[in-house]
Length: 290
Length: 290
Image (tube, rainbow over all chains, first blue to last red; front, top):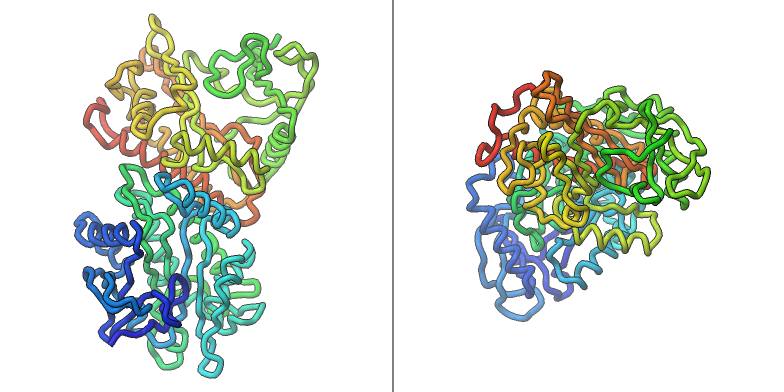
């Protein structure tokens, strides 16, 4: 039995009989192939990436596992349609806080069709992509058992100003995310430490400084952690995953300077949250977050 | 007595009664202010930068010294016009080999006028800026006393393909730059070593990963070295300098991910030239180049 995922924060959603991804009870995520070349391009990427022996293990862990494609009864009632079978990234999580960040100041590849480039360029300029090198696509932050998740609307998230992107990256690690002055209570546990998100982003950066195999246009970094688990003794387990590869192209010996520039910008913004004590960070800087 | 510079490889040139920079005999370079806001913007940058105590010394050395502005008899015969007085970067050089690289996959600032953005975007897409994150603007390479400098035409340089950018970065450090198979005879001396260009680029990169004061749109990295001096016992003295700040704007707390991405790409291309022995590099890898 497939069902609609609980913790999706961006992208097409299967709610209300639309076409969107589904999950099963064994930890698999079924993503319908987009009908145009984007679907086949994403399958081609996963196929290439999962069989590429040059990708080191500490990098493959940042990507969802890929189990092939399969015809699945689509969520929009159109019958059996091809789906990619991927790892369900929130399968083993209780109340995960999730943030989707679309990377790069440019979401279009040089070889894309002209009308697609113009559409992307407009979105890039209207969002923070051009100015900061990335934009937030969606997020949910678990607040408490009583109030549940704080999940701002997509249009609010997409129209954030530069300053508010930094504010939302603080809200993401706060016990009071819906407040205008977030407390950053979980900043050091989630962003800091040797297994925290900043460390993972730095590992990813080192790979992007060297790899010339792929250029990742319009790809997202997902951040995932669990907040409530500090209470029940489990770890926050902060992690990053790259998702959405419909616009990945061959690098042809050139690094992905567009993704890398945005990644360096994200690293800087998160570093500032960790080292700036004013109105944030309650329990130590850069300490190990487990 | 002011005269036209000998070693200019890009930008407006004062030859033939046009408006361009002039030099004196004491090592100063007189750059006419562009009439629109670009001139005043560049003066504003030099004034800000030269008085900013937060810029470390190992970074200020990568910028031309600034001595203020002065009315100078312009090269185009229009009488006394305002000029910036800068350091003449090739003053103490004999037969310098010079390469001008315009940095960033995007040469326009988000706040620029719409028609200017469209003009820049077209040039960025037609050149290697979008694909590689930088483009070559001009170069001269000293070949020999007999043949003098190899100096390809500006339109040839600006229309280079991705592969040819790498080829020209090899030609720049070759004893036979005009040949189709350059020997990279000076690669390790110029690009390699603890004082070589790669080391300097890495120092600049570390600063760009952190600094959020300035965003450098349409700015160039100049590379300069002397080739003939291996013979007469003097050093090659490879160095990089940043030039052209008409489109520098405030960073407002965000790193210059556009310049940084292009810089990482340039670093990767030069690293490949140093570590790939095939058809290049004759006398040891990454050895000290003095």
